[in-house]
Image (tube, rainbow over all chains, first blue to last red; front, side, top):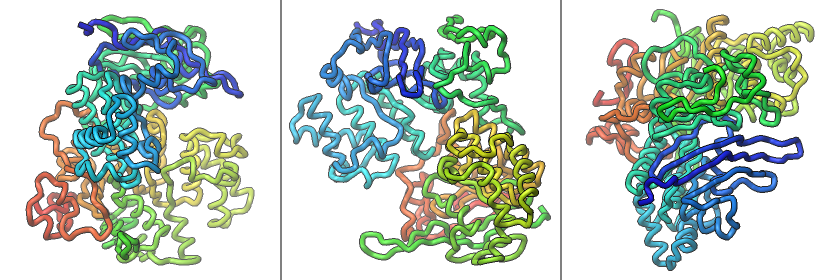
Length: 323
Length: 317
């Protein structure tokens, strides 16, 4: 049984972008372990490194300017050692990814059918006819009616929510074992978001698939993921089971994120508790703990030393000198 | 409330002529909107994309001309104002837009951006204008030593503060805010929302706060109006709307908020939003509404009061 083997492992991964303006430390010291069937949420604001880290799993960060160190091990294989050709066989097949803007992820000059068939014919070696059949099946599974007709249409003939469903259909069509969803519902209306998140949750359950869901919205992740990683300025600041982290955030940043969001129910506070200051310019990350200029608990050590992620028991870790 | 509204719309309609399938048709972006905004209070306007909420905002500030209906500012008709009268109106009603990256002229420095409304619409001299600009910048949390910086040198949150400063320059009584925090990071959103509240208290500002974000609207509004496909389907004081929503669309919106996992009896809408081009007779939600009956596609529901201040456009509510 493969159940106990670590399905996905990131070991001390660093991704630095070597730009003309300087070196941008997009991801620093990322560690991650996922078992098959896990759902992991990654939460952070702009510049947190969440997208770069996730893209690194399938080596989508253009290199140059990106330089990666550390290990990315998927189903026992070291991804960093693979050639492009070998990666080609994994992307879309074993690991699929969906992105934030469904309009720009689909090619506007090809029909949906052509785009869906491309992956099927490449990875599963289906014939044209088989590919069309399977595409229609997939569209149906993601809740798009009149699938046969829709395959002949172009992306602009679909709404944003439907395009995202098409992306999900494409991502699932080759039965991947890992789905990476980068802000899949941010550009969509809240009622459509709800439908899409439910679709993703069902897919995970029915296919014994693992999922990484990236979002800036704590609540979205709270609903759909078993565990959570909170990132800030390229580093992981808190990890743990989602429900617990959500109910009792340990890191000041996680607490700040939670406090700065207005609640949908319960007491209406007069004022929100925003986190003072701004997310740092990633080309000029503060020394020591990157969060210290914004942290009400900051002490001298925070200005000097970078805190490392420490286990605090019951699967929870935080990177903080004070808490 | 015996206070008179500062701005109200009566049966406001905004239609756009379009071509659909080669034939002329009418896109009914806003249909029969009746809204009242009170001095010093915030009316939240909630809806999804394509609901017409931004169109109402633009029409209220006269960026669009209404197709029919009335817009009254302090009791006086303002729809169709031109020239000097329109300028006078603009001293009272200003607007803040959604995208802090495209709503500021990239070739104007901060000082020019905030000063320009004063050049156009006040009688202050240069020195007085500069004083006022510095004063406003302090109010919105910006530094006077950034006067000669360009928009690209500021972050998203700061740019939105600049947009607020610009709107405040002429001392308006009402600001129409079109999704003012949607493009900002969560931690910055909170700062800007607190700023809105402070300014409202300090300057007795009224807001029409347009957003698709239910959490944010709940936080900042005294009253909330919900709009679907151009039609206002519910209006209520905030707490009551969120605790006792009456319209199926409002219920569905609230039920679809993330963070409510494990809730049973979620009201779910089927399918997607319909087209506002030549919309069908009857309730526009009928084809998606899980509790719709036959009558719903035949009779267009009117807004009626179900409890003080709480109105709903649904024959089943």
